Image 1 (cartoon, rainbow, N blue to C red):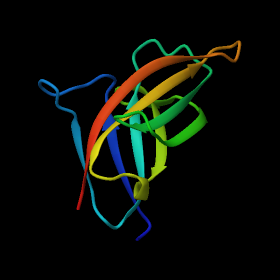
Image 2 (image 1 turned 180 degrees about the horizontal axis):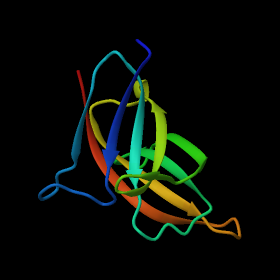
Image 3 (image 1 turned 60 degrees about the vertical axis):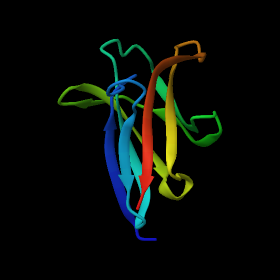
Image 4 (image 1 turned 120 degrees about the vertical axis):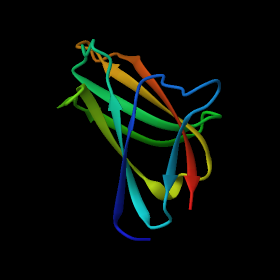
Length: 117
């Protein structure tokens, strides 16, 4: 496996057509994926935690203490995960916001389908 980083963008709750998810093709040489998670306009959290899960809910990767960064479209979180953990199939990213009290609440939800080649 190479040292290749594949980067793609997901929009909160975005589904193209009925029951379809954003389709991401991951070449076999890809070592890591970087997912840009666009935020809604109400960015009210001190930091974020992103969890990448299979459609059935199995945790694949978690990253904490993520900060919102400015983008051309507003703000986004950039989440990096190992590509080797992703097989063909459907995945979800749950983005939790960390409140000033330290409590976490669900901020956004993202869907995508992986196709390996």
